[in-house]
Length: 344
Image (cartoon, rainbow, N blue to C red):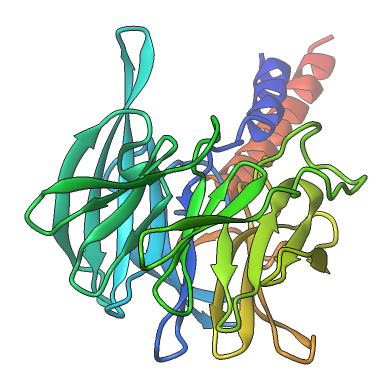
């Protein structure tokens, strides 16, 4: 019996893979860095949360979703406020996955103000493809359509992306333009209402290393003041740079096991959120900055070999409990074996 329990404990360690918490890394006007990850960061559980970087190996929990099956998409509005689109999984409805999304303004003390109410569907408010204007207006993706939602709830379509490409990500340009990442192309929606294609060559810029074979997923996009576009090419462990005239180069590469998921650009510095991907220890984060001279600095990294700790409460999490429990079970098994031997 003890042997079977020990095997079950080992198997449970391999089953701690968790879903993805969402996306977003932002740098506010004070230089503070916020990011989305699981809470707890390491170990079992699926509660998406927003953290603030407080040290090289330290983070502070700012907001935690109340729903276990959820995603948070963090962005910085033009008004300087933090916003989160919280998407909750409702289960299967009429044979399809159903989600409910709402948009909150997030204060730095963790309190939230509901800005736009519940919407159902698979990608309401564009999933993570949304922006917040100075007056609180939401610019978001709806399939291939770019839409605007006013503070009083009026919805208008701004433009439709050519072809059958779904919009994956949006970013503000230096002069109020909206940059649109759609599959392997980048478009620019100008302030005069016109749309131009900056590049369609992301698929034609291959790299042999892949995290997930065949995937073309691009997790995030940021735009510099000079019009350069940075794209988090998670599957190829790199950040691409697209020049103002559409030339694509590799801006940086991430070494195994890291892959870039989130980007923010402010005052000449690119901030890159990287993760280890889904594993039995969760999705572990690292944040680096790259300045105009190409100098790297790691400003935050979850300690891969540190004892697992729930940093929002200070309690040791289930991972440590499982290890201790395993030791106890092993000891009990050894004692029972010795007793059986002694009885013969």
